[in-house]
Length: 212
Length: 212
Image 1 (cartoon, rainbow over the protein chains, first blue to last red):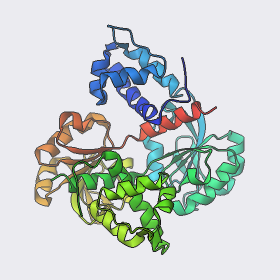
Image 2: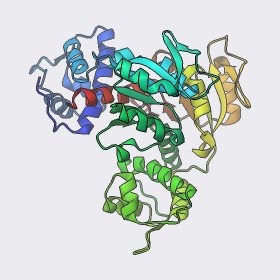
Image 3: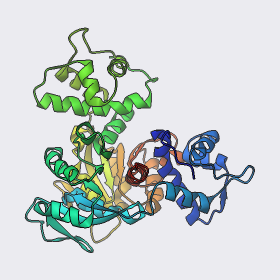
């Protein structure tokens, strides 16, 4: 497997989609797929599919297409989904709680080790099986003990700055960020995926407003 | 204000970010901003900023930069955020409930008019102020009465197909889609913003796996 630093972010961002569609095909017991059919599902061209997968070493066989199961496993590997990187959830409000229940972290490369809150009414109660909501004061000792590598930030921008500073000083470099705090501006070596839900809804508003 | 059909999706997708940053500057009572400073906040080049805003008619004054308040209002207008398009939430599970509480729809161009569920244990209870969780059987009559334009889909892929079919037949063409159902493949004239939370977490996994 050849990996390259020069693979563009747009190729990388398509990989989870390949993985998602291949997982569905695998569940439907589809064994082989042509680059044409895969392209159709992905809403890209067949040459784009071949080019994307060539970045990671190919996998296709001329005239035979791709083996669904094998390609799925290769991409799973490339994405690092077999890891169980220990992570903490910061914020157990409505949204953080929903994320904890909604996302199957273990299938996505992470393992949820703990959850932190500042709301004293929630501290000590159960977020989900095996996860008790902890006081943010325990963040340092917990992260050191559990060798935490990633944080999922489900807190408002105003409270994000200080807790991210503490996580960064603990060596946590990997952030799934639902707050609007710009982590990369302050910590250029952090690995950050921002999810701005509001932005996608505004884009929807734009598109419907300008569709007539 | 000149609007053009030829504005690329990548420019459009930056507009909510401009709006977000300008709103923050406005709250901090910043009155003017140069394209250089705006570019820095946006992590793009100054010429990109000028080019982006020129797509919508300019707004800047040579040597004076942009008026924060005015530019914010112009972009608010372009994004259609002053509308209150009536929308329904489909799915009042953990995730749908969190979305309903987390998102300020009225500031983003929409108004949440109703919420639908199939889980009989939830039907009849209160989602939030003014919104009772309704039986999906009432979908047709409610959407017709309330002239629903948009649907926010917080349901699994397996149950998405049938309810989207019903919404589409009712004339609903605008979808904020958290399910993994590919609406655009079946209904090419639908306006869809997909949010694949899993994909962003997989991208994070890839980036940390390949960062050493």
